[in-house]
Length: 449
Image 1 (cartoon, rainbow, N blue to C red):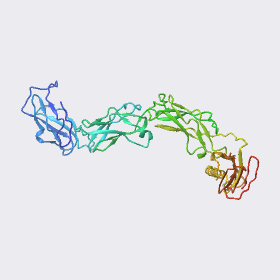
Image 2: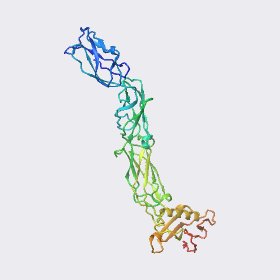
Image 3: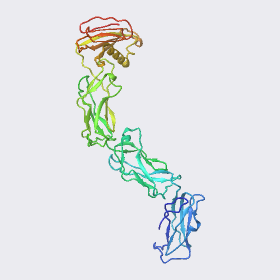
Image 4: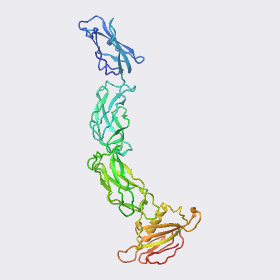
């Protein structure tokens, strides 16, 4: 009628077995109090395992009931017991585990998420186990604490776990009932700790909800210094790509306002010579952020720009990139510029790459004392029809004419040469270090070095 439980080797069962003598109708024979005893024995179990003490194996039958009071197992392991009394038919065998002292935690039931910010659909259960991986069901005092295993995923790292995070085990099982994960994510792992025992972890599982940014409309037709004709539109989705239409700026189950920030991806476009302006941060409305006035200021019409890529970010959401696109240029007006042609050696059309062009622009900025954004490489042409690997290069360098604040001439100089704004003249030694000369030419100056 009562199976043994709460068994640890060398300690009396917490729950001792009770055996009834019944008739064929399963009625307890309350009139039966014979002289013979009820005997407990082991049918199967660990080698050398036995029930102790010997005297506890025999108990009297009183009013058809035999109550054992001090049974214990000598060794840990899985046992099969039976109970017998004189010529009475044997009862069914009883299986029980005798544990060793608790040694580690193990998952009993794995958690499963539904959506963020609500109680987990399937709550985790943890078992106390011994070194033989047997549940220590004698234990009803150990406390176990749950936490999120921190990882390299910034969204998982930023999430919080709430609810009753510490529970008391009962008969070796530790059951959580109301855990809540605040944010969505694909690789959540819960960690369970208790003093003096080995930690256990869940397998990665997913919690749905706002998770990812997706580009709903790609930027297109961008022209330097002008609003992008087709402005980008970005949406918030879950990990399955479903639009989070309930995501609003101040209510989106993320760790901050639902706002999307646009920028130019590092290493694309004109490197450090470009910039982006306009309203760079847009709020999410019904799961979508609409950009309306983004403007890109490029490095220059003939600067060897890479394709531009816009990067979109939001708090706790996976970032997204736009498709690569070219930046177009409108020809500059013919006035207000200084034009110089400089022959570069030992550069070739091939070796004078984007990095070298950037260095050249910086050098010209230092020579003229004007901002880098006012320097533009108009063209790069070969001066000889020879092997491209050693082919000399001729450049036209366009500079916006400076306007001194005090009406006086403005000069900037370094090892490359001097620029005199009052004379609208640039004289330099050339990047390759060759001698140079100069001459006036109305609105432009051409220098061959």
